[in-house]
Length: 195
Length: 195
Image (cartoon, rainbow over all chains, first blue to last red; front, side, top):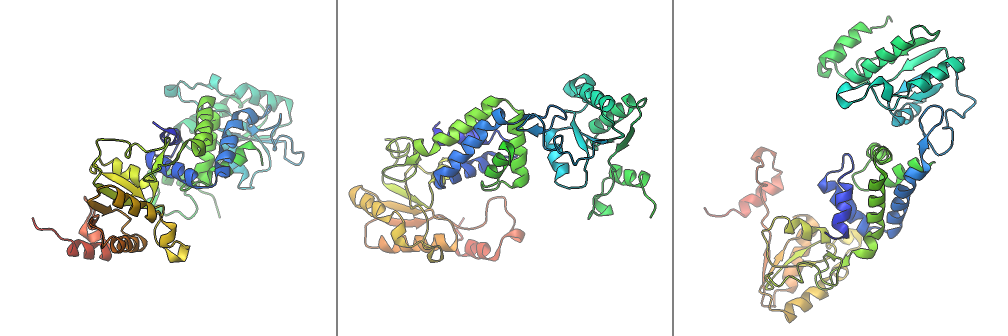
């Protein structure tokens, strides 16, 4: 094992990077300017020190509060609940939502040992009672676990004064009925809207 | 731009890694144990210092001579000529060839400004005259540039006493005639062998 094999080995442990891609990347780094290597190594090594969860919502940030929580122009009456910190970036990229976020840090999945107590729910309840939240949008993934988690949160918020909504589930734009799976097609019927 | 965006940006400059994969890898590194980050950053930063071309053949090595050149059990009468250092590893992984290698460091490609003088050909001629080489196998890629380079080398070795061969080109094993391109199919006819 030399330094090149070590690097290929490390790269192939990353998600979506197989042995061949890892080898290709390593050889590219060896052929390219050393400055890209230095930059990449520096970026990786400071990652854990610099990025931490936002004190309020749990999204990734370099500061005490994330960009959304510290932005006075955001609508503070609406909270969008997501599973993971990266979901915040995905939704932000669409520029459709102007409220605040709350990151659960996972979903209820008993087989993986994840129960409601592992999720950041106490923080959510504290925010709802402290701030004047009027709507909670459940943006967990449309999977069994995501749906279960959404139902669970809907139930514990039942007696509070906030309206609880869920992201629409149905046919993706540009999709084809022929290639839609049965569950998605069934949902698109149940959630049909009047024109 | 925070540390996470910086890392995603650096990752997406690697070959075969798009913006989405880069984001996925960065978030994985942030969620996973810090030790993987440290390992990866260390592996990347020492790469250029530790790996250099073998003094004789040009393959990557940590020492003065690569594993192949310094191995007394290799057949020193046969030299396999490849384009890039990584081709050595690709061929070594097959365990079919027991001779030595010679890395050209590229191919003749006038449009990219690569002429014969940019290739490591003087080293090759010196090796052939100094050592008792009997066969040179041209293992450049079966592309226009690779074929041109192979022809060029065949010509400059014409008056030496070594036999010059070229890797067979034809249908890949497990392939289907139906999906073979015309050039490959034509070559498989021209290079047909008797059974």
